[in-house]
Length: 353
Image 1 (spheres, rainbow, N blue to C red):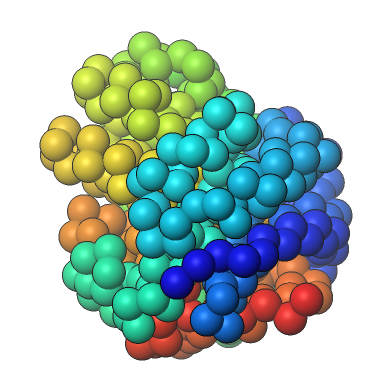
Image 2 (image 1 turned 180 degrees about the vertical axis):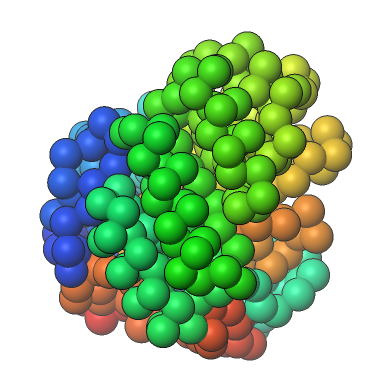
């Protein structure tokens, strides 16, 4: 097998409705960058990433340039020597984990095609389906309850509620959703916006309502995160504080969280995700596989990883649901809030570009 062509294609994808998060103006679209590797044998493997300055901190044009430089090198790399190939690309993507993710996924997809096996089996094959949450962005109380009911009608039984703008209103929103839908699993994500006292007050008020509280304090303040984790009865997960293996190790070594969240585009792809999961397993804390607003191809990669490890206890893979004109033709299925893998080789997706 030999790579004969690498094609990089940026696509601007609009959202069905604007999304509001802490510190982020209404998001109306994201830039997705697709990578295709063609082989002499006629196979095509796909990778993908997303870039958004407010969501990922990376300029889409910088990520695109890095991807194009990687594409120029890809034809000289062995398609199944993943560690070597990604190491050759490392100087280009050192400061662009989103670009690293795109090629990491493409090489893994190619490996699955070469082996004739679905990627989740090559990575570990622990299970073939996982329940996922659906996200409720920052809305009014009434709007939050209305959207929660819509998600339930679509089959979801697990919701992640975005918060952080107003701790008191976050408590009110969660409790209102709980009253309307008493049997759901609820999670709250503060996106690093609470003080220690606010985080503990929210955790105390919602101790019977939420499964866990994600990134309650500032991403760069590990000590505050640790203090909340030590005093909270609700499990605390680190997200922005553990975006790559080095920061994940710092969180785990400091016992600063009860779990680590992994996002493919933020950490740099499957190789880095596996390293973060290994750190979590060694520290005997949980892993959550999460996502950005992203195409289904990235969701397929997150799912492949989530299905590979018994340490992945939380799934949050709904970032594709509100994108318009996603060119991904997904191989996985969404059934009553569960993502179900198929035995299609590689990532199991094709892309209509």
